[in-house]
Image (cartoon, rainbow, N blue to C red):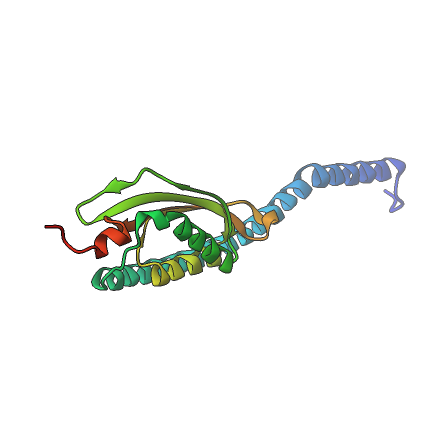
Length: 190
């Protein structure tokens, strides 16, 4: 037996190398690629979960501030404006939204409901803005507009390509005086 490499040995080694290369590119390579993609997806998921946790914390803080504001508002006397000031009040709400960098796309007052001491006018607002701007708007709304109750708030993200912007919907109610201003100040009849 000679130590020289026989042609059949060289062909066998070339075949073995070719099989190993095919196995790597067909099986091992894609598996490693999927593992890398999985690690990248896990890292992205961890980042998103961290962001969700942060947003939950902000939401909890905003809800706490809203509860505190609601308690202050409920304890403070309300000065209600007459129902004929509705358009001015809606304009003031729009101005506050713009001050908070929100874009109001829809604002629709509903049917006024007369109650024992006041008139409750539901108002639906919708638009676009960043989450932090919406929280600021709700804080200022509770602070400056004691005659507006917030009944609901919904927000839906529009994707990362919008720069963090989201669409929002706010259901609120404007509380107006039961009597017009001139009627409330008129002397009693009789």
